[in-house]
Image 1 (cartoon, rainbow, N blue to C red):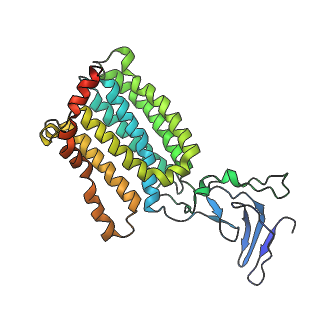
Image 2: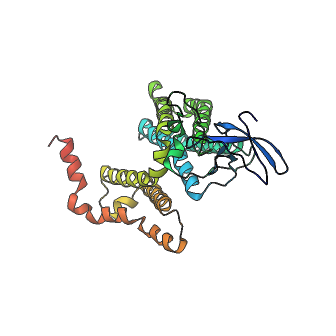
Image 3: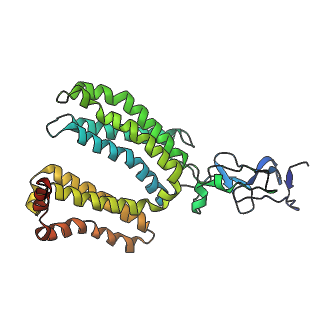
Amino acid sequence: MGGEIERTRGALVLFACLGLYCGKTLLFKNGSTEIYGECGVCPRGQRTNAQKYCQPCTESPELYDWLYLGFMAMLPLVLHWFFIEWYSGKKSSSALFQHITALFECSMAAIITLLVSDPVGVLYIRSCRVLMLSDWYTMLYNPSPDYVTTVHCTHEAVYPLYTIVFIYYAFCLVLMMLLRPLLVKKIACGLGKSDRFKSIYAALYFFPILTVLQAVGGGLLYYAFPYIILVLSLVTLAVYMSASEIENCYDLLVRKKRLIVLFSHWLLHAYGIISISRVDKLEQDLPLLALVPTPALFYLFTAKFTEPSRILSEGANGH
């Protein structure tokens, strides 16, 4: 039948299909008769099975997959908040409104991304199971049977975990450009004209960086993001508490902003712990959440020995 194969209930005719991600696409099915095409790339939304047939992605994402997508969704939001706080100034009343707008933009972008993904119109996605790191980098596994001609079998084996992040970033950028300039122009009266839009300019830099990061290191991030969350949240909490000269519980409670920062870091700690444990055994993994306040408590108990305020004052004086 040329380059095609036919599989029936009584007989199975197979031709060699090389490559880790090359498969045979179903061309026609009538009862027990299935006709498959030549070995090649699987269509979008499908991946090869153990028998080298392209099968549709019909599974639901695992908890770990949702946690990964949540991490990638949090990155632009956290960066938005950081640059808004950085450029707004301590006396600016516009920071809060910009924070809320950034949260609205990212939330709407996430909802729209889910709605336009397959199946369209519902807050649900179907996916293929991630089996190993190479699933993220299928372009590196195109076979060359005669060492001259390359059979291109590059496709999204982790559908849609790879491309859905790009779609989300695109919607985030579009919504930011539609909403944020109008808001900043209306309420950022306490800032100079050159400072009003700096948080937006910063986003125009970090969105391409995040896109390249996902394109190149998406697979590595998938396996490493729980540890990245834990390490970064611990470091940023220690830096914030030392920079704010927090040395006891009273210093922590004297300002609401400090409590908000503390609780935000606690949420990140919990997110990282849940991502690492994957809550496979609920009764064993949930007690690990009791470790969430430990870094802050350890800092408060040991701050009197390190005296962050003295270190900061000596650094300011050049000693």
